[in-house]
Image (cartoon, rainbow, N blue to C red; front, side, top):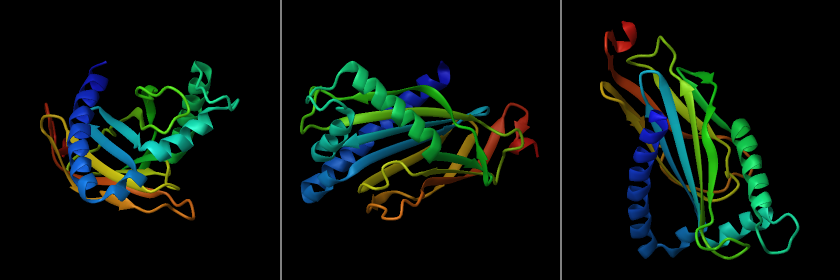
Length: 213
């Protein structure tokens, strides 16, 4: 699937840049190990909007998640337990991740199954892990210059988050992003927060320039 391939490449590049930034911060602020890293990439094409999210859990916060996965409490994470955890994550994401275009909610469709990477520590251990999510939505036909795209989330807002977000457009499509990056303390009231917001400044695709205007 070409959109998924493009999304993987873009998000990999963004993840590498984020990892470099995190490493620089970590040298001076070891307390950042208490934050869940959320790296978001919103990729807009003429027909689809792809959303890729990677959550990176440091060792201590990973242990909390691993204990939730370990349903029978035996200290081992079976394939079945991991599958049940990912099913729960997908159900939560469908409820707690929201994409809006020009202020109107659009349907997010799974682009791929969630990916759980326990790295080289497959059981209940104090060791980092990652979770990757991929979704897409259809671009409204009347979307063009001046349009806005916003992503809101209630995923892991009860944990300290370090958020990095990027919005990219295909050839002939350009966005200006409202900066929503940074450190976020845990939400005490479960409020949804805006991950990123972007305004379309160029829309030229074939003959449909500036959204058909």
